[in-house]
Image 1: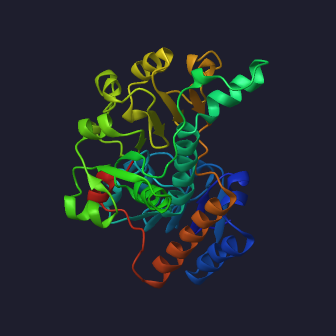
Image 2 (image 1 turned 45 degrees about the vertical axis):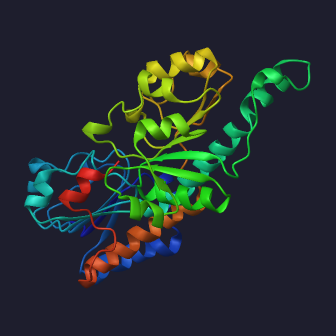
Length: 333
């Protein structure tokens, strides 16, 4: 086989999740239009001769595109990622060599926001505690589960005006919540335009019935929610995290949850898969899902459509709609 011009480094199962038959055919057609072949592999090292490769489509687990990798692909012009963050594999060397980068994170914002909303409603209405009580005990309603609240008029702190944060804002506003937006890059007028009141972190934590995390993984956001911040949350409040475990001091959260004073709904963890003996699994006030907030059928296929669109745009010399610059990379989750 001659050197492929478009390589999809996406496992067989994920390929079926991300790309419809029609969208994978678009990748093949783009390769043909560029005068070369299309190849799907599980790993980049499986490409026998990458010297002619101009486009690489990546998924999770892609290796860093360092100088050694790029020296073997002197014609590479585009890396198109089927996911959101490209931080694990994008290097300065890519930018230095003029390789363009794009990603499909926009398709993930809505499903993650929907899970954040589902978590929000579950914690407000005490669904995890009541469900567990019914399954494990023979009684009926137990007032000890705590007061139930509706989302209408509920003060909800949204930490981070990311794509997902904005999608979540749209959903909770539609249900009548009173959002408090915490984001140093967003001014009061912009927050108001998003339907939220701008607030500082401590103030939002003291006022909110639900705290929903949508901030990026930056040095300044590492463990931004620790023991001090959790202690500011009112009794009965809930923490929702569908972003990154990076944002929360896990030990402090576990300690606070064990008191029963607050609740939490988590889709992300410091160690994944979550160890079988992890204490979080035993807490009635912890609602847990296995990092699948973005895993909808529709969202996955939209990710593939975005990548196919971007690959076609690159091949035709059109602007990328989801391109990643150095500045944008620094702000990504």
